[in-house]
Image 1 (cartoon, one colour):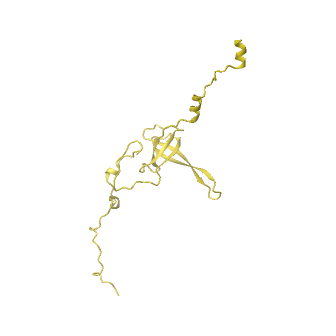
Image 2 (cartoon, helix red, strand yellow):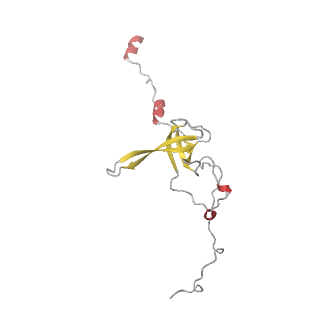
Image 3 (cartoon, rainbow, N blue to C red):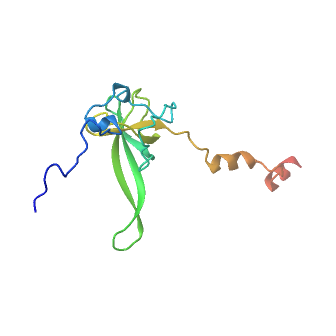
Length: 158
């Protein structure tokens, strides 16, 4: 038995409200600003945009800094071997945005996710404060001379 069109009640398209402007295909210009780092300066969060929690940030070493405003950062992570289940090091290189060209090869930086800047750049490089190693602290605490003269020095003084 065919259903008559009068029996089916569909809501009009104008009465449906979309929850976000991204579904219309347009993006507000306020969201398309320059890429910024949330570590460098706090930015106001928009109430309708959920935060990205999949990957907050990564740390790595700068391996190439020859390009203008771009650094190549190598990130090392530990992952289990698929067959032997032993943890092995996996390395991956990421391109990161460095607007001031302040990072050199060997610097340790933190990569923070941002909007795509180019085809390969979706991270911003942020400096990481250098931690003091324990070697420097132990050298300062232990004096080089104990204050006790050696036997050869006692013979010379006598």
